[in-house]
Image (cartoon, rainbow, N blue to C red; front, side, top):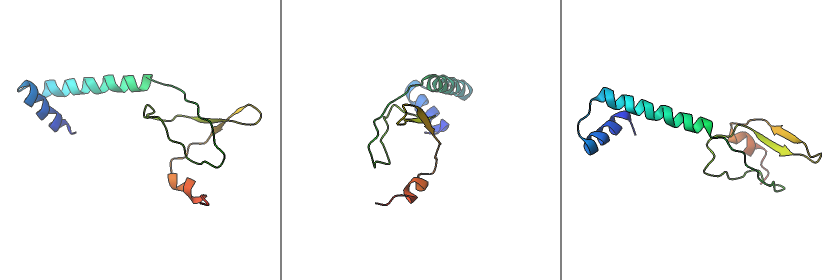
Length: 94
């Protein structure tokens, strides 16, 4: 939804409002939402299955900051960030 569409929807529901006022409200709302998103952090655990390359994530996850795997020495190893899914599939033998 664009800002213009949002303003049109607000005017339809609540009548004509000054655009400067509505843009200020939209900007305030965006700042509030970004503050909420940045302050919410959680960690999740998943059991690994031998041979499985991909795992589904919960809808609650917005961004993955770090992935760690517990090795056989009971120490966590950080997995490097990989943004290109095709790099994962290149090694796929199936």
